[in-house]
Image (tube, rainbow, N blue to C red):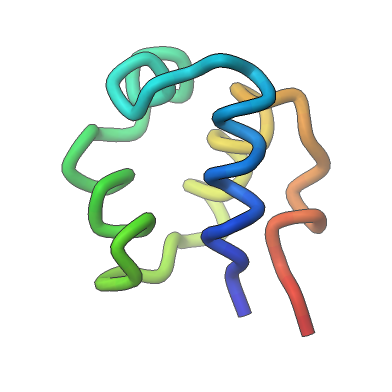
Length: 64
């Protein structure tokens, strides 16, 4: 399952707002908002983009 709290924590650690993350990752702001609100699960491609923008391993975004 995707760990939206890990995403939030990574954004804080990298000092990125949702808008800044959207620009850096080339993922729309709407998509990021929906992911963080739990209304959408990201595709693997989106997780890869977010992970790259946040200097994280894509596997870290998933919890058991």
